[in-house]
Each structure stands twice: as structure tokens, then as C-alpha cells.
Image 1 (cartoon, rainbow, N blue to C red):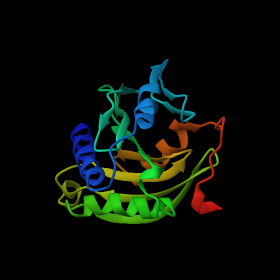
Image 2 (image 1 turned 120 degrees about the vertical axis):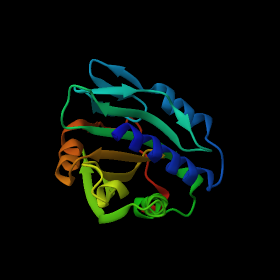
Image 3 (image 1 turned 60 degrees about the vertical axis):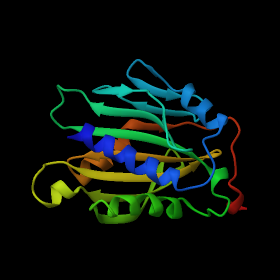
Length: 201
């Protein structure tokens, strides 16, 4: 079920990306290619990002919309009873010259899911991971609302990182599990060359 959720998640975000402006830049492709799996972790040196995946299966198969890039997809190993999944996506800030906050970007993404029948149960959730500010929305899937599935809740968290917009999609059986995964699995290090978003001057 979670793998299926991830698949439809990517389709929805790719559709969102295609509705925007320019194609994916070579720079964004370079960010995707920099990621690798090492000793139970997904590591991306360009973004100074690490995701722990000790009980999961990680797939690095950069998929592109017109400019949105999926960096990694992670799903709980078959032996894990408490199923979960991550999808990490990157977009370019330069594609949105009028974008003033992650909230505006996230609302556009969430709207794609509302059109598919997802319901918002919490939004504008502030979140900080290693001093990086994110904003999130938690939704229920249509199947969960109809009582057809124990899965899943989906948390979407977006934030600015250097020249990029990162979106963390976390899927799990409860809101509490989403919170736990965000707390324990992501590490964002200090960027070698910090970038100040122009709208924050």
C-alpha cells in the first residue's frame, strides 16, 4: 500500500511541476546524481543531508518532472511491521521568482492532493530539523477516510535549502509516527556556502 501511495505521490507532484515554468536545470540534476546509499544511510553531500534508513529499502532513481526531481524513495523493509515511507524531492528556487515562503509552495502541492480526494487534518505545521525551518501539512488518504485501509497518513514538509526547495513526504500509519520519523531519521548539516533567500533580506 505504501509503495502505491509513493507512486501516486510522484505522479501528483510531477503534474504540479509540469504546470510551472522552466525545465530541470543541469544543476538540479547534479544534486540528484550526488546522492548515494552508504551503510544504512542516504547521503547527499551537495545538500549536506543524511537520512537514516536502517530498517528500510532505499531506491535512488532520480525521476524528473519538467523541473522537479525525486532524489530518493525509501520504504520500510518487508520484515518491519510498522510500515512507513519517505520520498524526498528537490525543486529550484529560481523557478519561482515571486515565491516568498515555503508555505506558498506547499499549498500549491497540497492542492494537487485535495483534488484527488485527500483531506487536510493539520496544516501550517512549523518544524525545525537541525536549524532548518520547514512547514508541513498532514493529510488522510481517501482509502483511510472510507475505512478501507490502515494506511495512511501523509505528511508533506517543505523548506528552503541553499538554492533549492526540498519537500519531505513521509507516510505512516499515524500522525505520531510521522512526527517520530521526522525527529529521528533526518540530519541536515551546515552548508559550506550558506545561501540567503532573496526574500529574506
